[in-house]
Image 1 (cartoon, rainbow, N blue to C red):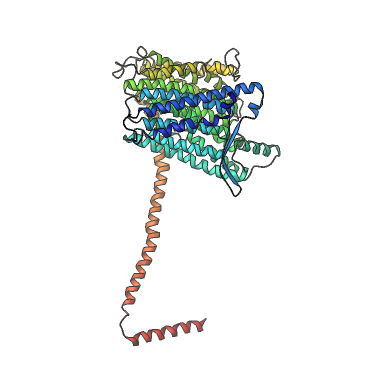
Image 2 (image 1 turned 180 degrees about the vertical axis):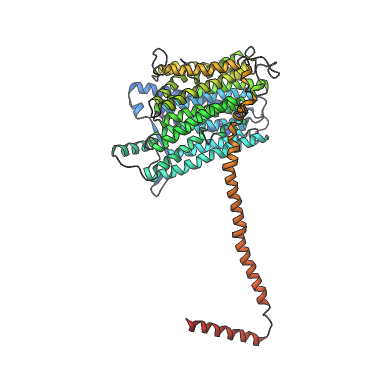
Length: 625
């Protein structure tokens, strides 16, 4: 019976997909008399079934692996052929591996908590079918993404997630900022997706396969036989990593996550915790190809390191709490890109493993404040520790899980990353980057905590009503899971307990950087200090950071201006050259016809003379040749 749960794990994406389809019955108003709320309850039920199936399949795999190694080295697989013609086969080849089951358990379990949270957050909202259906659509796409063993279908599922982002960001579509956010998020991610598609198409003729395991075998054969890289392979790998760069909001495709904050906060919880990880998942699956390209590895290090540092600096200047958290997402994932670029696939795995739950619990805690105090402006919040201590503790637990603070989960992963960078070719530069980024992330998290829970009450927080238990309960459950991450990592053998989970070389410099960043931020913001507001003589640095370093205006002056200029040039050439030539030739023909019409006199002798002259001219021309 237990093996049947494992063998049928391919059904897990179908549960939320069915829930999303059922939402259509309420979305256009086909079912009116019940109101929209049943759509949310149906989606919650089916998402819970998906979580139960994922958990039972994972338990079944562990029980089966205890009986033999086949469950680990030969996991169950399935295949569905979509196209098979002219020697080309495109199919959804799936692999039910242990990492995939762990990922699906986290995705579905987190979706259960978020959908419960959403029932409380959107209690008075009439857009339940659209919102809950979009959440379930997200879950189905993510579960399919971790199951598939095909690069092609990974691209297809990433495209579906892009569409889902557009729909869910535009939930409150009657607001101009929401429309702009949905449009910008969709178009920015489409840039990375188009480049990814070019890489996927160019990959098949070179490798002969789109399956990840087939690509791994092809790369191994290339190395073992000492064969040179195919022509253009470096460009193909660069195209393949463009998609994950867009999905993980890495520079220069990072502004979409900031714009997507216009969506309801429960969708922000999922997007910033597990949806962005979808791009990282694909990047890690492409690691055998990335190892062959020194150019791609260098690009990953440069892009990831720049994003980690710049995004953490921007987060320090943000006034909107959701936007501050979004830039911290880009910063943390930038460190993951650095790990992949340096060849530390295990380090990147651990960074991805410890990330989703702490980020989710912090956003849930922030959500209970935003909905209760009707603002997400950090300058209008404060003094909530005496009124909302439980969610304050939840935020602190999530912050501790992402900072390099032992014994929490983020410390062990960041220590491994610091050790990896110190052993690289640029130890001082990359090691310093990790320490500075960790300090800035710690400072940003404690700044948010200090501005919300520290200080004295503001007009918006003098009366801070308690929210529904449907929002507090999943937040506290998730806090408990975050606090138990170190024990879980020790239990499954990821880290050893000596004396703390993940303790090892270079631990002390990392802890010191955390203390410096978090301590200085608490000093300035827990009890507001005058130095927390930069003096105007510094040239508006804080405003510059709050405006995302004017990145959007820079894009408007460069990329957008170039596109607009090319569009104007194309419009001019079309009207002046293409249309001008066709119109000019037509006008010349009409003018000639008008002049020839004057020769029509009706005199047959004149016609005969014209015919004779024409014959004579033609004869003279033939004789001359």
